[in-house]
Amino acid sequence: MKKIGFLSFGHWANNPGYNTRTASDTLLQSIELAVACEETGLDGAYFRVHHFAAQLASPFPLLSAIGARTKKIEIGTAVIDMRYENPLYMVEDAGAADLISGGRLQLGISRGSPEQVIDGWRYFGYEPEKGKTDADMGRQKGLEFLEKLKGVGFARPNPNPMFPNPPGLLRVEPHSEGLRDRIWWGAASNDTAIWAAEKGMNLQSSTLKFDESDKPFHVQQAEQIRLYKDAWKKAGHKRTPRISVSRSIFALVSDQDRYLFGGESNRTDQVGFIESNRRAIFGRSYAAEPDQLIKELAGDEAIQEADTLLLTIPNTLGVEYNVHVLDSILKHVAPGLGWR
Image (cartoon, rainbow, N blue to C red):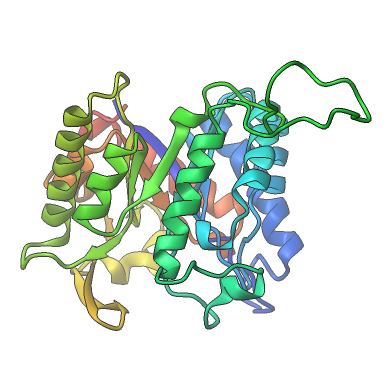
């Protein structure tokens, strides 16, 4: 068995071929898609977070709305760029969204990736400490977020408060018990995956990572996951961690599928740069008839190592088509691989 969710980047544009012409279209369709996917048996609804772009940004209003409309499906992010976040305010937002959903949040966070603007976090009022990088700042904020999610008081109470205080130091509210164990770190390197394990976070590994050998993407990613598992065990954490990988997978079961994604069938890994001085490898897409897709996916070592698979979706094509794309995987592919 494997948990299967969708991952939406939440694009919109005034494009005649898009079903998402505005931000409102994307937000409302994201809610409707999560509701529909819960009905089909999908396990998760995850969203990417980007700033200064016509894509989904501040995630908590959306996650809260989905939590209020659904009952079982996991609701998450992949990922929130911590360089832009106030960790204490984020604890409050995340706690509220988690309580609204009944404890279903699965929050992926990271130190951030290349942006639409130069040093966008500066516009949000943040600056790395002297001698530190923006990546250091993102990791430090992530650790502060984790620490405050424990719900331990840290703030000295006012002796003359507006409302009576409980005894001792105060924490930010609302506190959601158990959310600390449902935080994931998006890792693009082996070292960062090991660090995430040591800090007690679940692991998210996407469709790209830094190219740390000459091996195929799925093999490098599987090695990253095994290093993470070893580090988790050595750290002595008591719970079992969660591990997700993302993939673009399309079962070609209709003429529309073949028209839209038939050209993806011969895709291979690509090598490029997401940072000026580090080479990255981008994993291939999968698109084929179900029987062929099953054969190809059975050879993906990283999917085998993970307990959760996030399927990237073309959200601009609308709710109905994306439900079809995801349901085709659940019905025609997942059983043949033992995922269902």
